[in-house]
Length: 309
Length: 275
Image (tube, rainbow over all chains, first blue to last red; front, side):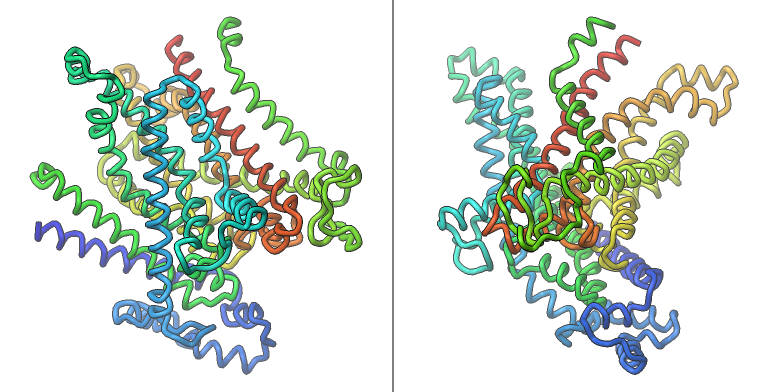
């Protein structure tokens, strides 16, 4: 167990180092001087003095090697540079917005699981019936529908036309409903098909025949015996889906003005706030590696056979 | 063969017809579009659908239908460029790593697995963010992100076929490795790759639209579906048509790609059994 954790920590260290290096290189190879582009994006006249001042502030006047060493130092000592727009340390800006994003991602995950289980079971029960066909169409639509369009449609229907739910910002649980549904619905309909397939496969198993022979009804077997087995792959998918929720939240946050990481990064890109963009990339890398580590760790606890190797 | 053709699902036909008409619309956009997609007419802004403007007008009074039709050109061309470069990178890598295996294969899979651990959209946005928004940077970013999943898919096909007996016999008959890859493996994996890429074409268009929606892809005033939805953000409460029709265009395109890929996938199995 200790060996596993140590191995993973070293891996995390390597990933952060690689990502930090690639991030550094990408900014350096992109055409144009970051200082000039930043000034232009923020409507400040790009006079020579202004460019020089900003360049020295960004540390662009040092040699490339010096800049690289400083950037790596910043990453591992934990300041991550200073935001050009707010003049605050990048790391604290990112952490301030993390809770909102995690809240949205968890809510989206909840909606996704609810849709998966309800739709998955009902399509498996009524195999090839009307509900099943509806589920197929929904899954097709669910993967073809752009999240931003779905978000707009929900917003128009539920906030503009009906006035039931607020469309902007973060506050009470009512603010959470539309963004979370937009985020979770599509993936939920797709996973419902996966759950349905697994359940129908399970129905071919001998233990189902045995239960049938004992006179237990088909629906009862489906819900109480088959579902338990079929849920396993869904549980294993939850880790990856959470990562995808965090990714999808970038778009959903931008539609619903949700004050999280995703909206912040899009704003920062449009303002060319390079320290924040660089910091976000490293932050996201750590976040996703950490999620995958956690998922692996949970598997290890659930299934000790993996530990043998 | 004729019997098979009769069996070809309506879904495949519908998907192909939609894709074909979309490409024709894009190709002949200047003759079909009722208006200039860039012509601003502030007197006629945010209009509902009418005979002059079948899909209504946007916040600058530009014809939405014309912009959607011209938008096909941007989306389809970018998607095809992305697909071309992705294939150019991933097919050789997948053929080599899948056929040769060994240490270089392990190393490649490490890189690919870590790329796939991060959601596509996050990685793409990160790269575009670092390089700066714009159509070319977006295309570059999507290629950088997508090649990994292609390599993984194609490599798995190559590995499966490399273990077939006829590959061993071909090798024993004195064929060079290069000839085996070209003559025996590449034709076998062509069809699955086609099915995979048909599905992926839809995903790429979705990707392009998402990035343009965030203002990171094609820049205004270029007519592009995602960018049109970005423009719609501030106005759709007054006139829902500014967001309804561009979104519908995206869904239609992606759906038909899915239909084609799904049906082709089914028929691929029957065809290969016949051979």
